[in-house]
Image (cartoon, rainbow, N blue to C red; front, side, top):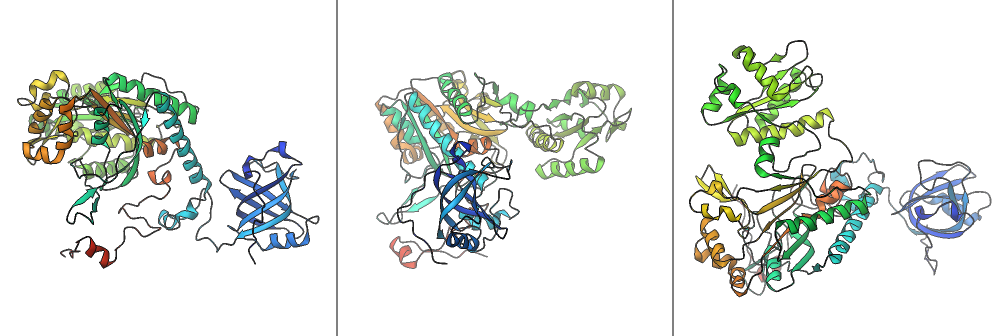
Length: 595
């Protein structure tokens, strides 16, 4: 079949934009063949573009040459069709355009297609690896197209909102100096300065602070960022964040801007009202009650401390943990006894051990009396106190971990999510935003016996904590905050240090010598000496917010050309080797890995 040329014919309408109001109108549509149905004297073609599907009709009134051309087309051929819109004799209620069709008078075949390696359908059964290899075909599926269309809307509302609130969108460099940011940098060799490297930015952190010093006072950017770290469903090596910074503000001013943004975004894109001000929770309360600094508050099942009840019991696992300075914590899975049989609890135990727990104690209340893995070591009074503390009743399952506090909380936090998904108690279509505040400034490293910074070195401590920087690191809390949505961290931010003396003090507290601090951050700290306004900001993950708003399970469903778990792109084959001449020009030699 010879391909046709457009020869001046122009599209007048998108396929799914047509309605019954267009009946009798002559239109031109373009797209791909979803399917062709040959009924002998009738041929129907479902034509698809990014808006959806319209049916093309060919019958005994169709020009013979046009009918024969329609007979030859196959799935994924590219067509242009001209004709009149008419009502369908057989309505398809599953299609927005199911009550109309186009009576085709002229048909052009603009592109042929091989048989696709998988069906171009929203619910295709093809594996992800195959679909990512042929990502350009995968992206023809309506669900992914709708995701990217929504992403466009999200980006547009974002720019509109911040523009209306006095922010300037300013681009920052993508070839920068390598500085410690918490993850490995992607490095770019310099041809001119052999042996030296640029880094791709993990964030525009220092540049946006410099913009505040430069007097721009309200900055935003849809910033591309890069981190060389292990991937998962909600992480990609390259990502986009809604980056903002503001001068002459305190924390609540930043909260107000961010809350106005999410209220506008969800209202305009999804038609969902987000009530503001958003709730707040301290880091300590989040960890103690949910075992996570990004808790999903759409369901209950909070963690209870039962250490005081069991510290003198005869069950050595419990009493021993408390005496060793640890803790005993529990969660109550309400009405879970029918779902969590002993076999299922054994699976949960293996999950807990996989996270680091030594085991998992349980109470399963099915009959009049609960079944308990440790009851023979307990008094009736102690068991009754546990039931009361956990609000246990018939039908419930109590899961208990005894260990060091941090481990017990993190294990129960993870089990809480696992159990909630298994029980199906996480409500759909609900969006629970939450600010997490008052993060610890330092984190104790048991391997080194020292305190490590939990934040980038420009994060300000709370004023009332500065006196403890040198004497009691555990009492130092950061003027930092996270925005959490449905158990996903959307954003991190902080008020920044602008006092050069305090900044030098912080570098010292973090173990950086004056020489190291000058080498890594001198261009920024030097700028602080020329009049730095008080400022702070945050960065909201655009990919993650798109993932949640589209109801996707993975970031790969809202990114056009994503990477897989090993940071490769299956379609193009990146990363790949380069010509030896290029390496020589860069003064780079590839070393073989030791086996």
